[in-house]
Length: 628
Ligand code: ADP
Image 1 (tube, rainbow, N blue to C red):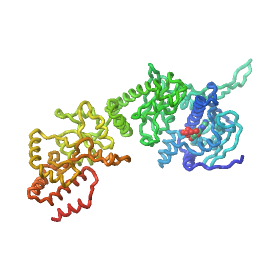
Image 2: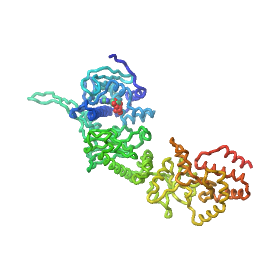
Image 3: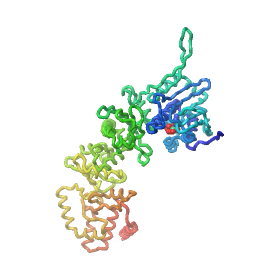
Image 4: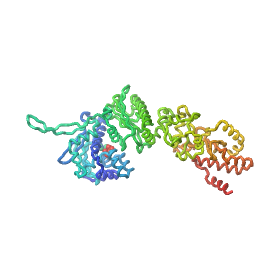
Protein backbone atom coordinates (compact mmCIF):
# COMPACT_ATOMS: atom_id res chain seq x y z
CA UNK A 1 0.00 0.00 0.00
CA UNK A 2 1.38 3.40 -0.89
CA UNK A 3 1.50 6.09 1.69
CA UNK A 4 -0.60 8.88 0.34
CA UNK A 5 -0.55 12.14 2.20
CA UNK A 6 -4.04 13.36 2.93
CA UNK A 7 -5.29 16.73 3.99
CA UNK A 8 -7.31 17.56 7.06
CA UNK A 9 -10.77 19.06 6.70
CA UNK A 10 -10.80 22.84 7.04
CA UNK A 11 -12.19 23.06 10.57
CA UNK A 12 -9.84 20.35 11.75
CA UNK A 13 -6.93 22.25 10.33
CA UNK A 14 -7.93 25.34 12.22
CA UNK A 15 -8.23 23.43 15.47
CA UNK A 16 -5.03 21.52 14.88
CA UNK A 17 -3.15 24.69 14.14
CA UNK A 18 -4.45 26.15 17.35
CA UNK A 19 -3.34 23.11 19.30
CA UNK A 20 0.15 23.12 17.86
CA UNK A 21 0.67 26.78 18.57
CA UNK A 22 -1.33 26.75 21.73
CA UNK A 23 -0.37 29.18 24.41
CA UNK A 24 -2.71 27.33 26.70
CA UNK A 25 -0.76 26.55 29.83
CA UNK A 26 -2.72 23.57 31.00
CA UNK A 27 -1.38 21.26 28.29
CA UNK A 28 -1.56 18.24 30.59
CA UNK A 29 -5.24 17.74 29.80
CA UNK A 30 -4.25 15.86 26.63
CA UNK A 31 -3.77 12.78 28.81
CA UNK A 32 -7.28 13.00 30.21
CA UNK A 33 -8.64 13.29 26.66
CA UNK A 34 -6.78 10.25 25.34
CA UNK A 35 -7.69 8.14 28.35
CA UNK A 36 -11.29 9.20 28.09
CA UNK A 37 -11.32 8.12 24.42
CA UNK A 38 -9.72 4.81 25.36
CA UNK A 39 -12.33 4.24 28.03
CA UNK A 40 -15.15 5.06 25.59
CA UNK A 41 -13.66 2.59 23.12
CA UNK A 42 -13.73 -0.17 25.74
CA UNK A 43 -17.28 0.79 26.70
CA UNK A 44 -18.27 0.45 23.06
CA UNK A 45 -16.72 -3.00 22.85
CA UNK A 46 -18.44 -4.10 26.02
CA UNK A 47 -21.68 -2.66 24.86
CA UNK A 48 -21.40 -4.51 21.54
CA UNK A 49 -20.80 -7.80 23.33
CA UNK A 50 -24.16 -7.44 25.05
CA UNK A 51 -26.08 -7.47 21.78
CA UNK A 52 -23.74 -9.16 19.32
CA UNK A 53 -23.18 -12.87 19.97
CA UNK A 54 -20.11 -12.92 17.74
CA UNK A 55 -18.31 -10.54 20.05
CA UNK A 56 -17.19 -11.87 23.37
CA UNK A 57 -15.09 -10.12 25.96
CA UNK A 58 -13.36 -11.15 29.09
CA UNK A 59 -14.23 -8.39 31.49
CA UNK A 60 -11.11 -8.91 33.56
CA UNK A 61 -8.84 -8.22 30.62
CA UNK A 62 -10.27 -4.86 29.62
CA UNK A 63 -7.64 -2.24 30.33
CA UNK A 64 -5.84 0.93 29.36
CA UNK A 65 -2.07 1.10 29.37
CA UNK A 66 0.34 3.95 29.59
CA UNK A 67 4.05 3.52 28.93
CA UNK A 68 7.03 5.80 28.83
CA UNK A 69 10.09 5.52 26.63
CA UNK A 70 12.60 8.06 27.87
CA UNK A 71 15.18 7.29 25.25
CA UNK A 72 12.90 7.91 22.32
CA UNK A 73 10.94 10.58 24.21
CA UNK A 74 7.60 8.90 23.57
CA UNK A 75 4.51 8.40 25.65
CA UNK A 76 2.16 5.61 24.60
CA UNK A 77 -1.49 5.18 25.53
CA UNK A 78 -3.19 2.00 24.47
CA UNK A 79 -6.49 0.25 24.99
CA UNK A 80 -8.06 -3.06 24.06
CA UNK A 81 -11.37 -1.55 23.08
CA UNK A 82 -13.37 -1.60 19.89
CA UNK A 83 -10.61 -0.17 17.65
CA UNK A 84 -10.98 1.68 14.36
CA UNK A 85 -11.15 0.46 10.79
CA UNK A 86 -9.23 2.25 8.04
CA UNK A 87 -12.32 4.30 7.21
CA UNK A 88 -12.90 5.17 10.84
CA UNK A 89 -9.32 6.35 11.28
CA UNK A 90 -9.84 8.58 8.31
CA UNK A 91 -13.25 9.75 9.39
CA UNK A 92 -12.57 10.23 13.11
CA UNK A 93 -9.09 11.63 13.10
CA UNK A 94 -9.28 13.59 9.86
CA UNK A 95 -12.30 15.52 11.06
CA UNK A 96 -12.81 16.89 14.51
CA UNK A 97 -15.75 15.79 16.60
CA UNK A 98 -18.93 17.45 15.44
CA UNK A 99 -19.73 19.09 18.74
CA UNK A 100 -16.25 20.57 18.87
CA UNK A 101 -16.32 21.89 15.34
CA UNK A 102 -19.65 23.61 15.95
CA UNK A 103 -18.15 25.42 18.89
CA UNK A 104 -15.18 26.63 16.94
CA UNK A 105 -17.21 27.63 13.94
CA UNK A 106 -19.22 29.99 16.08
CA UNK A 107 -16.21 31.48 17.72
CA UNK A 108 -13.55 33.86 16.52
CA UNK A 109 -12.12 34.94 19.78
CA UNK A 110 -8.70 33.65 20.80
CA UNK A 111 -9.31 34.08 24.53
CA UNK A 112 -12.48 32.08 24.27
CA UNK A 113 -10.69 29.40 22.25
CA UNK A 114 -8.42 28.90 25.20
CA UNK A 115 -11.29 28.59 27.58
CA UNK A 116 -12.88 26.04 25.27
CA UNK A 117 -9.70 23.96 25.17
CA UNK A 118 -9.53 24.06 28.93
CA UNK A 119 -13.07 23.27 29.76
CA UNK A 120 -14.50 21.39 26.85
CA UNK A 121 -11.46 19.36 26.05
CA UNK A 122 -11.61 19.00 22.26
CA UNK A 123 -10.37 15.48 22.32
CA UNK A 124 -7.73 13.71 20.34
CA UNK A 125 -6.20 16.78 18.72
CA UNK A 126 -5.08 18.05 22.11
CA UNK A 127 -2.23 15.54 21.80
CA UNK A 128 -0.65 17.99 19.37
CA UNK A 129 -0.23 20.47 22.20
CA UNK A 130 2.61 18.31 23.49
CA UNK A 131 3.73 16.29 20.45
CA UNK A 132 5.47 16.89 17.13
CA UNK A 133 4.26 13.64 15.74
CA UNK A 134 1.41 11.30 16.65
CA UNK A 135 1.02 7.69 15.54
CA UNK A 136 -2.25 5.86 15.97
CA UNK A 137 -2.25 2.15 15.32
CA UNK A 138 -5.61 0.49 15.51
CA UNK A 139 -7.37 -2.77 14.85
CA UNK A 140 -11.12 -2.80 14.77
CA UNK A 141 -13.14 -5.81 15.91
CA UNK A 142 -14.83 -5.54 12.52
CA UNK A 143 -11.65 -5.87 10.49
CA UNK A 144 -8.99 -8.50 9.92
CA UNK A 145 -6.41 -5.86 9.15
CA UNK A 146 -4.88 -3.15 11.26
CA UNK A 147 -3.82 0.35 10.20
CA UNK A 148 -1.49 3.07 11.27
CA UNK A 149 -2.34 6.76 11.06
CA UNK A 150 0.57 9.17 11.31
CA UNK A 151 0.63 12.94 11.37
CA UNK A 152 3.19 15.59 12.13
CA UNK A 153 0.62 18.34 12.19
CA UNK A 154 -1.28 20.56 9.81
CA UNK A 155 0.50 19.35 6.69
CA UNK A 156 -1.72 16.26 6.66
CA UNK A 157 -1.62 12.61 7.62
CA UNK A 158 -0.91 9.19 6.16
CA UNK A 159 -2.61 5.86 6.71
CA UNK A 160 -0.88 2.56 6.03
CA UNK A 161 -1.41 -1.05 6.88
CA UNK A 162 0.13 -2.19 10.15
CA UNK A 163 0.71 -5.33 12.11
CA UNK A 164 -1.35 -5.17 15.22
CA UNK A 165 -2.76 -8.52 16.28
CA UNK A 166 -5.32 -7.66 18.91
CA UNK A 167 -8.23 -5.33 18.72
CA UNK A 168 -7.75 -1.90 20.21
CA UNK A 169 -5.83 1.30 19.67
CA UNK A 170 -2.31 2.36 20.48
CA UNK A 171 -1.36 6.02 20.39
CA UNK A 172 2.31 6.99 20.40
CA UNK A 173 3.12 10.62 21.16
CA UNK A 174 6.52 11.95 20.11
CA UNK A 175 6.93 14.71 22.62
CA UNK A 176 7.99 18.20 21.56
CA UNK A 177 11.38 19.53 22.57
CA UNK A 178 11.28 21.47 25.80
CA UNK A 179 11.65 25.23 25.64
CA UNK A 180 12.13 27.91 28.26
CA UNK A 181 8.39 28.21 28.74
CA UNK A 182 7.38 24.61 28.33
CA UNK A 183 8.84 21.52 29.85
CA UNK A 184 7.62 18.44 28.01
CA UNK A 185 10.08 16.20 29.83
CA UNK A 186 7.68 16.10 32.74
CA UNK A 187 5.43 13.79 30.72
CA UNK A 188 8.23 11.24 30.72
CA UNK A 189 8.25 10.96 34.51
CA UNK A 190 6.29 8.08 35.95
CA UNK A 191 5.47 10.04 39.03
CA UNK A 192 3.93 12.90 37.07
CA UNK A 193 1.90 10.63 34.86
CA UNK A 194 0.59 8.84 37.90
CA UNK A 195 -0.38 12.14 39.46
CA UNK A 196 -2.17 13.33 36.35
CA UNK A 197 -4.14 10.12 36.11
CA UNK A 198 -5.19 10.44 39.74
CA UNK A 199 -6.18 14.00 39.12
CA UNK A 200 -8.19 13.64 35.94
CA UNK A 201 -8.98 10.01 35.32
CA UNK A 202 -9.35 8.37 38.69
CA UNK A 203 -13.01 7.47 38.12
CA UNK A 204 -12.39 5.69 34.81
CA UNK A 205 -13.85 2.26 35.47
CA UNK A 206 -11.21 0.25 33.65
CA UNK A 207 -7.76 -0.15 35.15
CA UNK A 208 -5.13 2.24 33.80
CA UNK A 209 -1.92 0.29 34.13
CA UNK A 210 1.72 1.16 33.87
CA UNK A 211 4.69 -1.14 33.99
CA UNK A 212 6.87 0.02 36.83
CA UNK A 213 10.46 -1.00 37.25
CA UNK A 214 11.58 -1.74 40.72
CA UNK A 215 14.83 -2.88 42.21
CA UNK A 216 14.41 -5.79 44.50
CA UNK A 217 16.92 -7.43 46.70
CA UNK A 218 17.20 -11.12 46.07
CA UNK A 219 19.81 -13.18 47.87
CA UNK A 220 21.71 -10.03 48.59
CA UNK A 221 21.76 -9.11 44.92
CA UNK A 222 19.90 -6.16 43.52
CA UNK A 223 17.64 -7.16 40.72
CA UNK A 224 15.46 -5.13 38.43
CA UNK A 225 11.92 -6.39 38.20
CA UNK A 226 8.97 -4.85 36.52
CA UNK A 227 5.39 -5.12 37.59
CA UNK A 228 2.05 -3.67 36.65
CA UNK A 229 0.68 -0.93 38.75
CA UNK A 230 -2.92 0.24 38.48
CA UNK A 231 -2.93 4.01 38.70
CA UNK A 232 -6.63 4.78 39.16
CA UNK A 233 -8.96 3.84 41.97
CA UNK A 234 -11.70 2.94 39.44
CA UNK A 235 -14.37 4.03 41.83
CA UNK A 236 -16.78 6.05 39.75
CA UNK A 237 -17.18 9.56 41.04
CA UNK A 238 -20.84 8.94 41.85
CA UNK A 239 -19.98 5.98 44.06
CA UNK A 240 -17.53 7.86 46.19
CA UNK A 241 -18.58 9.34 49.51
CA UNK A 242 -19.97 12.80 48.96
CA UNK A 243 -17.50 14.33 51.35
CA UNK A 244 -14.60 12.84 49.41
CA UNK A 245 -15.45 14.57 46.16
CA UNK A 246 -14.63 18.20 45.61
CA UNK A 247 -16.99 20.42 43.69
CA UNK A 248 -14.28 20.95 41.13
CA UNK A 249 -14.13 17.22 40.43
CA UNK A 250 -17.84 17.10 39.69
CA UNK A 251 -17.45 20.09 37.42
CA UNK A 252 -14.56 18.51 35.53
CA UNK A 253 -16.45 15.27 35.23
CA UNK A 254 -19.42 17.15 33.80
CA UNK A 255 -17.52 19.23 31.24
CA UNK A 256 -15.57 16.18 30.16
CA UNK A 257 -18.46 13.73 29.88
CA UNK A 258 -21.20 15.99 28.67
CA UNK A 259 -19.30 18.19 26.26
CA UNK A 260 -19.89 21.54 27.84
CA UNK A 261 -17.35 24.31 28.19
CA UNK A 262 -18.99 25.88 31.22
CA UNK A 263 -19.39 24.26 34.59
CA UNK A 264 -22.93 23.31 35.62
CA UNK A 265 -25.10 25.69 37.59
CA UNK A 266 -26.13 22.89 39.91
CA UNK A 267 -24.92 19.39 40.77
CA UNK A 268 -27.52 17.03 42.20
CA UNK A 269 -26.48 13.78 43.79
CA UNK A 270 -28.79 11.22 45.27
CA UNK A 271 -28.64 7.79 46.68
CA UNK A 272 -31.99 6.07 46.90
CA UNK A 273 -32.73 2.77 48.59
CA UNK A 274 -36.08 1.17 48.06
CA UNK A 275 -38.15 -0.81 45.62
CA UNK A 276 -35.65 0.25 43.03
CA UNK A 277 -32.33 1.37 44.46
CA UNK A 278 -30.14 3.72 42.51
CA UNK A 279 -27.47 6.36 42.66
CA UNK A 280 -27.76 9.38 40.45
CA UNK A 281 -25.53 12.25 39.56
CA UNK A 282 -27.36 15.00 37.74
CA UNK A 283 -26.24 18.34 36.39
CA UNK A 284 -28.18 21.41 35.45
CA UNK A 285 -26.22 23.18 32.72
CA UNK A 286 -25.54 26.87 33.17
CA UNK A 287 -26.64 27.64 29.63
CA UNK A 288 -28.72 26.00 26.93
CA UNK A 289 -26.73 23.91 24.42
CA UNK A 290 -26.71 25.47 20.96
CA UNK A 291 -29.16 22.88 19.65
CA UNK A 292 -31.39 22.79 22.73
CA UNK A 293 -34.50 24.24 21.16
CA UNK A 294 -34.09 22.26 17.94
CA UNK A 295 -35.24 18.84 16.80
CA UNK A 296 -31.65 17.57 16.94
CA UNK A 297 -31.50 17.81 20.72
CA UNK A 298 -31.88 14.46 22.40
CA UNK A 299 -32.76 14.32 26.04
CA UNK A 300 -31.69 11.48 28.30
CA UNK A 301 -29.44 10.29 31.07
CA UNK A 302 -26.69 7.74 30.94
CA UNK A 303 -27.83 4.49 32.41
CA UNK A 304 -25.40 2.26 34.28
CA UNK A 305 -25.94 -1.09 35.81
CA UNK A 306 -23.48 -1.69 38.63
CA UNK A 307 -21.01 0.78 37.22
CA UNK A 308 -21.22 -0.46 33.62
CA UNK A 309 -22.66 1.84 31.00
CA UNK A 310 -25.61 0.17 29.32
CA UNK A 311 -27.24 3.11 27.57
CA UNK A 312 -25.90 6.51 26.65
CA UNK A 313 -29.10 8.50 26.41
CA UNK A 314 -31.97 6.88 28.19
CA UNK A 315 -34.79 9.31 27.46
CA UNK A 316 -37.33 7.46 29.61
CA UNK A 317 -35.57 8.66 32.74
CA UNK A 318 -36.51 12.29 32.21
CA UNK A 319 -39.81 14.04 31.62
CA UNK A 320 -39.71 16.41 28.62
CA UNK A 321 -39.95 19.52 30.73
CA UNK A 322 -36.71 18.58 32.49
CA UNK A 323 -34.98 17.59 29.25
CA UNK A 324 -32.13 20.01 29.95
CA UNK A 325 -30.85 17.86 32.82
CA UNK A 326 -27.67 15.91 32.08
CA UNK A 327 -26.13 13.14 34.09
CA UNK A 328 -26.43 9.50 34.92
CA UNK A 329 -28.24 6.87 36.90
CA UNK A 330 -26.56 3.74 38.21
CA UNK A 331 -28.80 0.98 39.49
CA UNK A 332 -28.22 -2.58 40.59
CA UNK A 333 -31.84 -3.36 39.94
CA UNK A 334 -31.63 -2.76 36.20
CA UNK A 335 -30.59 -5.75 34.17
CA UNK A 336 -27.59 -5.49 31.87
CA UNK A 337 -29.75 -6.73 29.04
CA UNK A 338 -32.33 -4.03 29.16
CA UNK A 339 -32.92 -2.73 25.64
CA UNK A 340 -34.56 0.32 24.12
CA UNK A 341 -37.56 -1.79 23.19
CA UNK A 342 -38.24 -3.12 26.66
CA UNK A 343 -37.55 0.17 28.40
CA UNK A 344 -40.99 1.57 27.98
CA UNK A 345 -42.59 -1.14 30.04
CA UNK A 346 -39.77 -1.24 32.49
CA UNK A 347 -41.24 -0.75 35.90
CA UNK A 348 -37.98 0.18 37.59
CA UNK A 349 -37.22 2.87 35.03
CA UNK A 350 -40.65 4.33 35.69
CA UNK A 351 -40.00 4.40 39.43
CA UNK A 352 -36.66 6.10 38.91
CA UNK A 353 -38.18 8.68 36.59
CA UNK A 354 -40.83 9.60 39.16
CA UNK A 355 -38.29 9.88 41.90
CA UNK A 356 -35.90 11.97 39.77
CA UNK A 357 -38.74 14.29 38.80
CA UNK A 358 -39.47 15.01 42.46
CA UNK A 359 -35.81 15.46 43.22
CA UNK A 360 -35.15 17.85 40.34
CA UNK A 361 -38.21 19.90 41.20
CA UNK A 362 -37.10 20.17 44.80
CA UNK A 363 -33.60 21.21 43.85
CA UNK A 364 -34.91 23.87 41.48
CA UNK A 365 -37.19 25.18 44.21
CA UNK A 366 -34.23 25.33 46.57
CA UNK A 367 -32.21 27.21 44.01
CA UNK A 368 -35.09 29.63 43.56
CA UNK A 369 -35.26 30.17 47.31
CA UNK A 370 -31.60 30.27 48.15
CA UNK A 371 -29.87 31.47 45.05
CA UNK A 372 -32.20 33.69 43.13
CA UNK A 373 -29.53 35.00 40.79
CA UNK A 374 -28.58 31.53 39.62
CA UNK A 375 -32.20 30.56 39.26
CA UNK A 376 -33.00 33.56 37.11
CA UNK A 377 -30.04 32.76 34.90
CA UNK A 378 -31.28 29.21 34.64
CA UNK A 379 -34.80 30.37 33.90
CA UNK A 380 -33.70 32.69 31.09
CA UNK A 381 -32.32 29.69 29.24
CA UNK A 382 -34.68 26.90 30.24
CA UNK A 383 -37.85 28.64 31.42
CA UNK A 384 -39.44 28.15 28.03
CA UNK A 385 -39.17 24.38 28.49
CA UNK A 386 -40.91 24.56 31.88
CA UNK A 387 -43.71 26.66 30.41
CA UNK A 388 -44.01 24.25 27.56
CA UNK A 389 -44.37 21.49 30.16
CA UNK A 390 -47.45 23.17 31.66
CA UNK A 391 -48.94 23.77 28.24
CA UNK A 392 -48.29 20.39 26.66
CA UNK A 393 -49.58 18.46 29.68
CA UNK A 394 -52.89 20.37 29.40
CA UNK A 395 -52.22 21.79 32.83
CA UNK A 396 -51.78 18.39 34.49
CA UNK A 397 -48.27 19.33 35.50
CA UNK A 398 -49.10 22.74 36.84
CA UNK A 399 -48.60 21.56 40.41
CA UNK A 400 -45.09 20.40 39.58
CA UNK A 401 -44.17 23.38 37.46
CA UNK A 402 -46.39 26.31 38.44
CA UNK A 403 -44.16 27.48 41.26
CA UNK A 404 -41.06 27.26 39.10
CA UNK A 405 -42.28 29.81 36.58
CA UNK A 406 -41.09 33.38 36.54
CA UNK A 407 -42.75 36.39 34.91
CA UNK A 408 -41.68 40.00 34.77
CA UNK A 409 -43.78 42.20 37.00
CA UNK A 410 -44.81 45.83 36.61
CA UNK A 411 -43.84 46.32 40.26
CA UNK A 412 -40.12 46.58 39.56
CA UNK A 413 -39.69 45.14 36.04
CA UNK A 414 -38.01 42.16 37.65
CA UNK A 415 -38.86 38.48 37.69
CA UNK A 416 -41.52 37.34 40.11
CA UNK A 417 -43.13 34.01 40.89
CA UNK A 418 -46.89 33.62 40.92
CA UNK A 419 -46.68 32.95 44.64
CA UNK A 420 -44.96 36.24 45.24
CA UNK A 421 -47.49 38.05 43.07
CA UNK A 422 -50.39 36.56 45.02
CA UNK A 423 -48.78 37.50 48.33
CA UNK A 424 -48.63 41.11 47.18
CA UNK A 425 -52.19 41.24 45.86
CA UNK A 426 -54.37 44.05 47.17
CA UNK A 427 -57.10 43.21 49.64
CA UNK A 428 -59.93 43.66 47.19
CA UNK A 429 -58.06 41.97 44.33
CA UNK A 430 -59.14 38.48 43.34
CA UNK A 431 -57.49 38.18 39.94
CA UNK A 432 -53.96 37.97 38.59
CA UNK A 433 -53.63 40.68 35.94
CA UNK A 434 -51.41 40.30 32.91
CA UNK A 435 -50.77 42.01 29.61
CA UNK A 436 -49.26 40.63 26.43
CA UNK A 437 -46.94 42.11 23.87
CA UNK A 438 -43.61 41.92 22.15
CA UNK A 439 -41.65 43.72 24.83
CA UNK A 440 -42.17 45.35 28.20
CA UNK A 441 -41.87 48.80 26.63
CA UNK A 442 -44.51 48.03 24.07
CA UNK A 443 -46.84 46.61 26.70
CA UNK A 444 -46.40 49.71 28.81
CA UNK A 445 -47.69 51.75 25.89
CA UNK A 446 -50.96 49.82 25.74
CA UNK A 447 -53.79 52.13 26.80
CA UNK A 448 -55.43 49.43 28.93
CA UNK A 449 -52.23 48.94 30.90
CA UNK A 450 -51.93 52.52 31.97
CA UNK A 451 -55.23 52.68 33.77
CA UNK A 452 -54.64 49.39 35.59
CA UNK A 453 -51.28 50.61 36.76
CA UNK A 454 -52.79 53.89 37.79
CA UNK A 455 -55.17 52.07 40.06
CA UNK A 456 -52.05 50.51 41.54
CA UNK A 457 -52.59 46.94 40.47
CA UNK A 458 -49.57 44.85 39.56
CA UNK A 459 -49.40 43.45 36.04
CA UNK A 460 -47.37 40.53 34.73
CA UNK A 461 -45.77 41.25 31.38
CA UNK A 462 -46.14 38.30 29.07
CA UNK A 463 -43.57 38.70 26.34
CA UNK A 464 -43.02 35.09 25.32
CA UNK A 465 -45.37 33.82 22.67
CA UNK A 466 -46.06 30.82 24.88
CA UNK A 467 -47.02 32.77 28.00
CA UNK A 468 -50.70 33.41 27.55
CA UNK A 469 -51.29 29.82 26.47
CA UNK A 470 -49.67 28.75 29.73
CA UNK A 471 -52.12 30.82 31.79
CA UNK A 472 -55.02 29.54 29.75
CA UNK A 473 -54.02 25.94 30.44
CA UNK A 474 -53.35 26.61 34.12
CA UNK A 475 -56.77 28.29 34.43
CA UNK A 476 -56.01 29.45 37.94
CA UNK A 477 -53.24 29.69 40.48
CA UNK A 478 -53.96 29.30 44.19
CA UNK A 479 -57.65 29.84 43.51
CA UNK A 480 -57.02 33.10 41.63
CA UNK A 481 -58.03 33.51 38.02
CA UNK A 482 -55.87 35.12 35.39
CA UNK A 483 -57.15 38.16 33.55
CA UNK A 484 -55.75 39.80 30.46
CA UNK A 485 -56.06 43.57 30.87
CA UNK A 486 -57.21 43.58 27.26
CA UNK A 487 -60.12 41.29 28.06
CA UNK A 488 -63.53 42.87 27.66
CA UNK A 489 -64.43 41.67 31.16
CA UNK A 490 -61.64 43.76 32.66
CA UNK A 491 -63.35 46.30 34.83
CA UNK A 492 -61.92 48.30 37.69
CA UNK A 493 -64.82 50.76 38.00
CA UNK A 494 -66.74 51.34 41.21
CA UNK A 495 -70.40 50.26 41.32
CA UNK A 496 -71.61 53.81 40.58
CA UNK A 497 -69.22 54.26 37.70
CA UNK A 498 -70.35 50.94 36.29
CA UNK A 499 -73.97 51.95 36.54
CA UNK A 500 -73.32 55.30 34.88
CA UNK A 501 -71.41 53.75 32.01
CA UNK A 502 -74.09 51.15 31.49
CA UNK A 503 -76.73 53.85 31.15
CA UNK A 504 -74.67 55.84 28.70
CA UNK A 505 -73.97 52.76 26.60
CA UNK A 506 -77.65 51.93 26.49
CA UNK A 507 -78.45 55.46 25.49
CA UNK A 508 -76.03 55.28 22.59
CA UNK A 509 -76.83 51.76 21.47
CA UNK A 510 -78.11 52.92 18.06
CA UNK A 511 -74.88 54.82 17.44
CA UNK A 512 -72.91 51.69 18.23
CA UNK A 513 -75.04 49.54 15.96
CA UNK A 514 -74.41 51.99 13.17
CA UNK A 515 -70.68 51.93 13.78
CA UNK A 516 -70.65 48.13 13.95
CA UNK A 517 -72.40 48.00 10.59
CA UNK A 518 -69.44 49.82 9.00
CA UNK A 519 -66.96 47.42 10.50
CA UNK A 520 -68.97 44.30 9.61
CA UNK A 521 -67.45 41.05 10.94
CA UNK A 522 -64.30 42.75 12.18
CA UNK A 523 -65.74 43.47 15.60
CA UNK A 524 -68.53 41.88 17.54
CA UNK A 525 -69.63 45.17 19.08
CA UNK A 526 -68.74 48.78 19.80
CA UNK A 527 -69.08 50.50 23.17
CA UNK A 528 -67.84 53.21 25.51
CA UNK A 529 -65.41 52.38 28.24
CA UNK A 530 -63.71 53.81 31.33
CA UNK A 531 -60.63 51.68 31.12
CA UNK A 532 -58.67 54.13 28.97
CA UNK A 533 -57.27 56.96 30.96
CA UNK A 534 -56.34 59.52 28.28
CA UNK A 535 -56.33 57.31 25.21
CA UNK A 536 -59.19 57.41 22.73
CA UNK A 537 -59.62 53.80 21.75
CA UNK A 538 -58.68 50.15 22.19
CA UNK A 539 -59.61 46.67 21.10
CA UNK A 540 -60.51 44.15 23.77
CA UNK A 541 -61.08 40.52 23.21
CA UNK A 542 -63.92 38.32 24.18
CA UNK A 543 -63.81 34.60 24.88
CA UNK A 544 -60.92 32.15 24.65
CA UNK A 545 -58.70 33.71 22.01
CA UNK A 546 -57.04 37.04 22.72
CA UNK A 547 -55.56 39.27 20.03
CA UNK A 548 -52.09 38.22 21.19
CA UNK A 549 -53.00 34.56 20.78
CA UNK A 550 -54.42 35.38 17.37
CA UNK A 551 -51.00 36.70 16.35
CA UNK A 552 -49.18 33.63 17.65
CA UNK A 553 -51.58 31.09 16.18
CA UNK A 554 -51.51 32.76 12.79
CA UNK A 555 -47.73 32.80 12.70
CA UNK A 556 -47.51 29.04 13.28
CA UNK A 557 -46.50 26.92 10.29
CA UNK A 558 -49.59 24.76 10.69
CA UNK A 559 -51.77 27.83 10.88
CA UNK A 560 -55.14 26.87 12.29
CA UNK A 561 -57.25 28.32 9.48
CA UNK A 562 -56.71 31.96 10.14
CA UNK A 563 -57.77 32.22 13.74
CA UNK A 564 -59.52 35.41 14.68
CA UNK A 565 -60.01 36.76 18.15
CA UNK A 566 -63.50 38.00 18.84
CA UNK A 567 -62.94 41.69 19.48
CA UNK A 568 -64.83 44.67 20.83
CA UNK A 569 -64.02 48.23 19.81
CA UNK A 570 -63.99 50.28 22.99
CA UNK A 571 -63.98 54.06 22.97
CA UNK A 572 -63.00 56.23 25.90
CA UNK A 573 -66.16 57.82 27.23
CA UNK A 574 -64.16 60.65 28.73
CA UNK A 575 -62.34 61.51 25.54
CA UNK A 576 -63.63 64.32 23.27
CA UNK A 577 -63.94 61.77 20.47
CA UNK A 578 -66.96 60.20 22.17
CA UNK A 579 -68.81 63.52 22.06
CA UNK A 580 -67.84 63.95 18.43
CA UNK A 581 -69.29 60.56 17.55
CA UNK A 582 -72.53 61.31 19.39
CA UNK A 583 -72.79 64.59 17.51
CA UNK A 584 -72.21 63.07 14.09
CA UNK A 585 -74.88 60.52 14.81
CA UNK A 586 -77.32 63.16 15.95
CA UNK A 587 -76.64 65.19 12.81
CA UNK A 588 -77.21 62.03 10.77
CA UNK A 589 -73.87 62.63 9.14
CA UNK A 590 -73.37 59.00 8.29
CA UNK A 591 -70.65 59.59 5.76
CA UNK A 592 -68.38 61.25 8.32
CA UNK A 593 -69.35 58.77 11.04
CA UNK A 594 -68.21 55.92 8.83
CA UNK A 595 -64.84 57.56 8.23
CA UNK A 596 -64.31 58.21 11.94
CA UNK A 597 -65.28 54.68 12.80
CA UNK A 598 -62.87 53.20 10.29
CA UNK A 599 -60.02 55.36 11.51
CA UNK A 600 -60.69 54.50 15.14
CA UNK A 601 -60.83 50.80 14.36
CA UNK A 602 -57.54 50.82 12.44
CA UNK A 603 -55.92 52.89 15.18
CA UNK A 604 -56.96 50.30 17.74
CA UNK A 605 -55.43 47.58 15.59
CA UNK A 606 -52.20 49.54 15.33
CA UNK A 607 -51.99 49.87 19.09
CA UNK A 608 -52.53 46.14 19.51
CA UNK A 609 -49.73 45.43 17.03
CA UNK A 610 -52.15 43.83 14.57
CA UNK A 611 -51.69 44.25 10.81
CA UNK A 612 -53.63 47.02 9.10
CA UNK A 613 -55.89 45.53 6.50
CA UNK A 614 -55.97 48.50 4.16
CA UNK A 615 -53.20 51.03 4.92
CA UNK A 616 -53.97 53.18 1.87
CA UNK A 617 -57.57 53.65 2.90
CA UNK A 618 -56.50 54.60 6.41
CA UNK A 619 -53.91 57.16 5.34
CA UNK A 620 -56.31 58.70 2.83
CA UNK A 621 -59.02 59.03 5.46
CA UNK A 622 -56.66 60.65 7.97
CA UNK A 623 -55.34 63.07 5.34
CA UNK A 624 -58.81 63.98 4.31
CA UNK A 625 -59.80 64.84 7.87
CA UNK A 626 -56.69 66.82 8.70
CA UNK A 627 -56.91 68.82 5.48
CA UNK A 628 -60.30 70.13 6.49
P1 ADP B 1 -14.65 12.89 20.78
O1 ADP B 1 -14.03 11.90 21.69
O2 ADP B 1 -15.10 14.12 21.47
O3 ADP B 1 -15.68 12.29 19.86
P2 ADP B 1 -12.04 12.94 19.57
O4 ADP B 1 -11.42 13.91 18.60
O5 ADP B 1 -11.31 12.75 20.85
O6 ADP B 1 -13.49 13.45 19.80
O7 ADP B 1 -12.18 11.56 18.88
C1 ADP B 1 -12.83 11.44 17.65
C2 ADP B 1 -13.33 10.04 17.46
O8 ADP B 1 -12.26 9.15 17.24
C3 ADP B 1 -14.07 9.47 18.64
O9 ADP B 1 -15.41 9.87 18.66
C4 ADP B 1 -13.91 7.97 18.42
O10 ADP B 1 -14.90 7.51 17.51
C5 ADP B 1 -12.56 7.87 17.74
N1 ADP B 1 -11.53 7.48 18.70
C6 ADP B 1 -10.67 8.30 19.35
N2 ADP B 1 -9.86 7.58 20.16
C7 ADP B 1 -10.23 6.29 20.03
C8 ADP B 1 -9.79 5.04 20.60
N3 ADP B 1 -8.81 4.99 21.49
N4 ADP B 1 -10.39 3.91 20.18
C9 ADP B 1 -11.41 3.95 19.27
N5 ADP B 1 -11.87 5.06 18.72
C10 ADP B 1 -11.29 6.22 19.08
